[in-house]
Image (cartoon, rainbow, N blue to C red; front, side, top):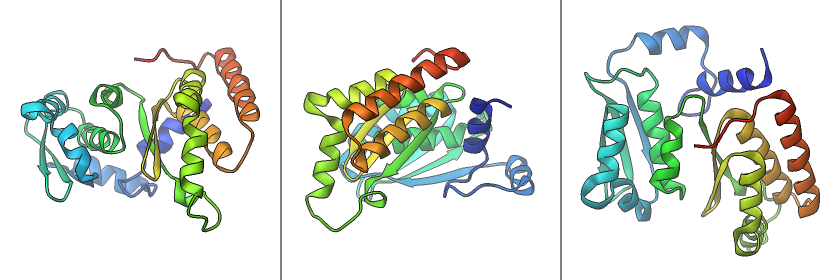
Length: 219
């Protein structure tokens, strides 16, 4: 089993709380009929999730064959399977798309999660930042984004992942290897590594991936 398959299996066998499912739990989940998922997104992102005249929500429902209900007051999103749902992961995919939009991605970029093998990782910056300096979060966000967004763009270009910096989080979309590389680069920046060091890390990993044949074209 290569690194890509190992990481993909890691993401497939976790529940919505991030806990690894035991084999019996996976079999029980697959045997269930109607599936349900719940996520809460920032209220200011509800309009993006719904879209003009409900277009974005309808598109997610159409492409995943799920039913989505959004509470505009609380930002709560409920996703359930329907009689037409075919993909056993459809409810999870719809949940992750809603989460990605809630963490700052445009619907177009969030739809990348519909592609096979693509995953979402959300990093809470407050879990990494050390100390109580009130200026630490804006400073760290600035290091990740870079001048005119250039650092974020470099991370995306070199890893192949999509990155969104929103509030106290950084969200990453890509295949498991791409996400792993982008996440490591971001964590290095948060912990104070010089940008040059992080760029060299990205360049090295990009070459490694190309040699291994595990670089996938971005959608």
